Amino acid sequence: MGATRKPRGHDIDQGGHTEELSDWIHRARCKKVLFRRSPRRNLRVEAVLAYTISTAERELHHKQMLRLRRWQQIKEKLTITQRHCQNEEEFYESGHNEQEENVWEAPLCSALSSLDSFMSMLKAIKAPLQR
Figure 1: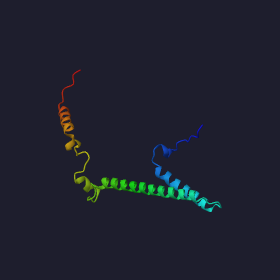
Figure 2: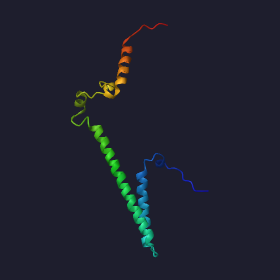
Figure 3: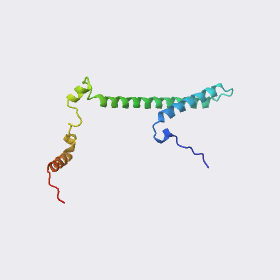
Figure 4: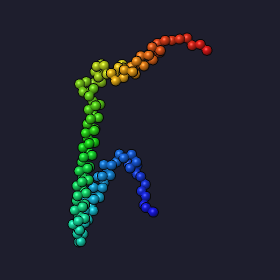
């Protein structure tokens, strides 16, 4: 029988991969220090540890930079409409009211636009209810 491992909370949602990688790098560095201090040094093990630590550090740095770029893109998308507005009142006066915007006016939604106009015409017709 093989050993099984219970999934931890951050293993399930895959959100903690950078934390796992950081912890692994820390444990590998500690192991490298222990091997260096041992009286019977094994240069092959030290070389393998040094290579894997440097590879893991590059991967961690790459993931951190990707995460930083994604956050910057999200922040830019959220603030692009409010960039020139000084306060909230000016933002709403400039025509960025959610209720006034028609979602169906986009050029990609021509079929949906015709359906929306048909539904609004049906809504305008008020037939008496007969039971």
